[in-house]
Image 1 (cartoon, rainbow, N blue to C red):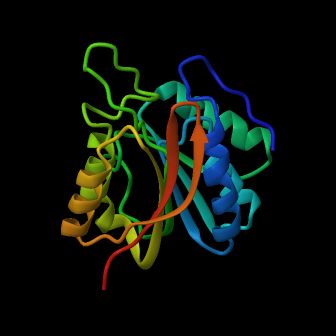
Image 2: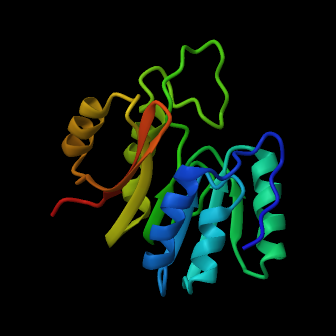
Length: 188
């Protein structure tokens, strides 16, 4: 896979590659949504892995351009939409939703959309989960990244109250933090 990245777009790193491996395993014959696509690594990986359809969403107009260019570079079809989470996404149901959100806690003063997940590092994740139900297929799965620096206890409690399961399926130590790949779905 070939990827070009712009200055204001999240450059794929360890968290992206950890998620990419799982996307490649799960995307075949599924309708996939890559929320917060950045370079498009997840949606393009899904398309290359035989996804039925691949969609990508990002708030950053430069990320939208970057994802479109990278999809073309890799000869795959990805529907790319500029939106703040689900705001402008047409109603659809997805079998697999992937989200590598900004997940680090921030003080509100030096925020960068590529990494700032709010004061506790989970605000963007929780906003996503408040909206995702209307877009998740009955047996749909959600893959997302979160950090050991975020308020994990609160994240787990709030997701449970919202009716979502949470299982850590992979983790990676990077310098002074652990990055977790979470798998979630609706509790039945």
